Image: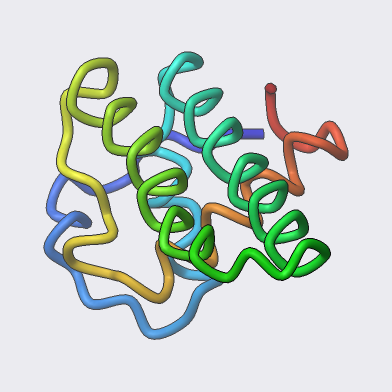
Length: 111
């Protein structure tokens, strides 16, 4: 289940592990619409990636960051009203997108 943001200064904190970062990541994705936009972007990335690999349409790979980050950033700027964690924590944030999608699909967090 989602955990509340324990420390307002956490957005400027240095995280030593993904396990330490993930509760912060979830707290930055508390809006249902924002989370769902993230899921749409991630699933679209998978669909485009699979199609590009199967069809050999390699130019479609250029759409991956647009699909993934485009939906997510709309969620942050218009629904969460916060700055995407990607700007400060690019690797952990990328990992968080996929872990959050997995957790939603397995029922660990609200879809």
